[in-house]
Length: 186
Image (cartoon, rainbow, N blue to C red; front, side):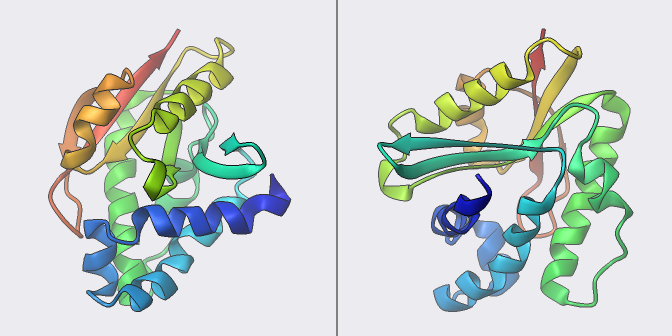
């Protein structure tokens, strides 16, 4: 999928550009949000333990799920250890990742879903659910673990219908408290 990262990253931007966290971090101007949020998504392509799956309509990527494999959670092993950045926008994301790491810590071995994105005009067709099921199946039963993700409250129902349960809430510096959700892998 390396050659397709630019396409996947562009999809992330289209899917999340109007989300409250992007508006809070980069402001009302859509162009500023588009430009600013590249710094959030670009590092996702370099994780050696990445889980990256794509849904396609023929040859076109229409959805992606990106995360970390069991016992290699990127937020716990990398992001939680980084120093607070000078850039105020990135500092918001840094604080969010530290809050995630704090709620991950007591949960033992886990895989992590960082992003699920579907082409905005195709949302509601079941693509996101299929991607989450594929991520769950990819983990198999090699290690008894949980598949964790964080979401904003307005996404709760979607993830519950995909088999996730809410574990707790935690502070999100760019909006309402976020939800930590878990799907158990047998």
